[in-house]
Length: 375
Image 1 (cartoon, rainbow, N blue to C red):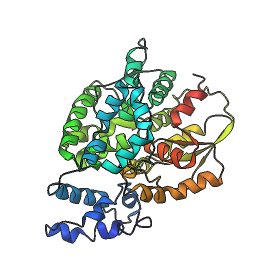
Image 2: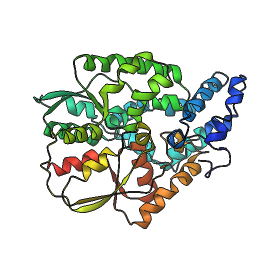
Image 3: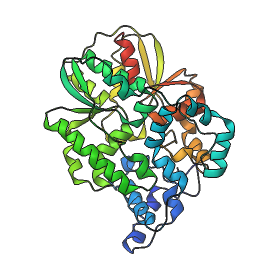
Image 4: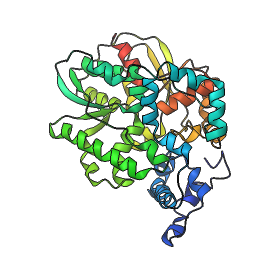
């Protein structure tokens, strides 16, 4: 990030070095905090395990008490509400947000850069599709699908459900709210905590029945497993950690136990895999890459390590669009140089950003796995 903009002095200076400001009750310079995209790479590479992102977030919370978030930050923080409204108003909402004049108004009036990728809303949500299906028998497993899958890309949810059913599981969908990460990123900690409390209460019901929970978005999973307790101070969140799994991590565990259905059909081709920052933050390795290597005929190559730059709503903001693009340029350059046609990534933001800046097709690993099962 510090290479992309001089307004961010780097994680060391804005993190542990700036702790002297925090200990004295002095506010850390606002630009230092605003230009951190919370990728958590600094936390992973720090040799002394200093929780630098947590230090940044602590300062943001203090700063939030002295300034009111803008209307733009309110809108981006409440993305789940806008997605629900957009889905209800489809196809009119897609036409409106695709109109260049409306994008210009959002840019000039709110600071949402008109060049940013704008996802298309879906009339039928993933939850509606799921509840319209006949029930399936099998070992129960719960799925936290998240807002993006529900309102923007239901096919990811369908892929998760059908792959799990191919392995003898009966998927359930617990009552769930937005994980709260967009709210945290835009300064609405109290509201994020209220949504978190609802999610914890709902997910604990599944856990108490002996049912494990999987998620398909690393950012949602990281929020549930880590941010609820460390950032939002929700103590009951500690009961979730051992029962929450990235869906590829869960399937790979089945493989290690000899329980995974490996009756894959051959898929010929070469795909490239981008590792999301928040997946690395979970410290679970690269389970999707290992899973996809089991498919005969398929060649999957990991792209050079790097952040895509979008970081949720970060790269949508006018003053940060160019910064986000510069942060992700190393990844984009690799995609172009390799002449990649398809890029796989677990993260919805990464898929949006890479597709926007390179024009390649992007997919979630479970969409590939579903094809291999011939579903």
